[in-house]
Figure (cartoon, rainbow, N blue to C red):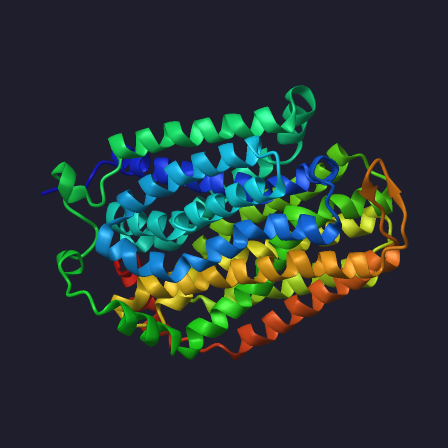
Length: 436
């Protein structure tokens, strides 16, 4: 029995990646619409931060269960349920006349997309050779990040032309159409299409450990916890800035129009997307996770350190520094293979979920805390119903963000990686391990 043709494997992966792309779009959407949301819902910085963070709260809540259920129910069912819920959530957010309804919609979107990444990696493990796992992980992250790019200037232009509510409602309808395509095309394993699977047969029939036992075991793993905490800084902080507070910072402190400020954060997201597969390829070539991850973490510390220490510096200095940090943020894609190499095969799905939880935990805390810091320094100024914050207020929040990133980098140095030979074996088997 031969392996599935590349075009079929890419079709299966492409639908999962499309759902992941939509999740990225919804994740950073409030950044481009920040002033419109603050105006229409009369939001303070804290309230806007909390509204945006609702996505991350529910996303984080489903990570560990998803990591286990993807093995028990299969990725197709989770992707189908997620895309359906995401469409309903987007419609609720767009049509909601109150913060309660809009918040419920955003929370539903977050929970739905919490199923995307782990499910997509599981499909990669079954439909692609194991030696390509790191590279495909990076490409998957890059494709997902395109959704964040679409939530920048393109979204703002559509919102200005047609209104933000009709625009967001249209994305909800597209998500429901995607659910139909997922139901029609995706299968958990190539065997269901008459082809050989890249995942070992024993993975498909392995005995499932009790749910609570699997959770306890993965939560007790020191390395996985450290890697999850690293992600909260290396990627969570990046998302907190590009996904919400970057645009208001550049608008209020550097006099840019929302479209111009969004162009900067979009460029950051673009480099984040492009660098992810490059880090994945480097890891596959070196048979190592920690070294390239540490290089990326160091770039994050440097880039956001410049921003926090000199927020009033010319854009000619700030923007290149942030672009360097954005390249470093793409190294977070290595955290998943790193975490999975740290646990037995039957726990690797849960380890992936916990690692992804770290990303969301960082953003869901940082977004509202930055709002609290800004409101604590607010001097009462506003314009058009939107609060204006001083440079000192923004710098206080950015120093908090930079300190979190630096702490995450220190934790990365404390992680342990197996010797080179063992790491090489893990790279060979990491795609298969995803089958959990």
